[in-house]
Amino acid sequence: MTKTSKLTVTLPEDLISFADRMAKKKKISRSKVVSLCIQEMAESQRIAEMAEGYQIMAKEQKQIVDAASEIEHEVIPEWR
Image (cartoon, helix red, strand yellow):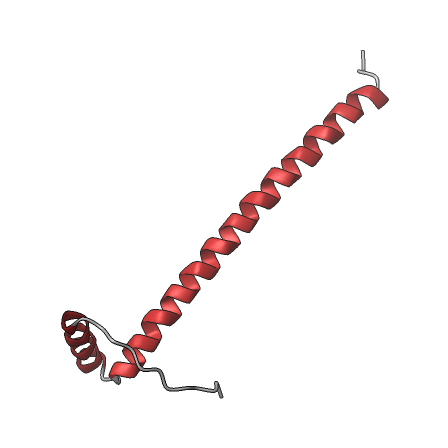
């Protein structure tokens, strides 16, 4: 089970009202609403970081392919 800790936050009243409405609608606590929002933000951040990593890897792979292609033309003569 995940360890939990208490956190006191100050929010604008409109956000508190929204959290209360969502909690009532989903039949969960206000605390769970806040927790789910933060979890969603963390997941979005993780996905963004993974996408950035894949883009960097793709760029590196293209550089490797380009370098290998240059060497290939030097090492293997063109077939005639």
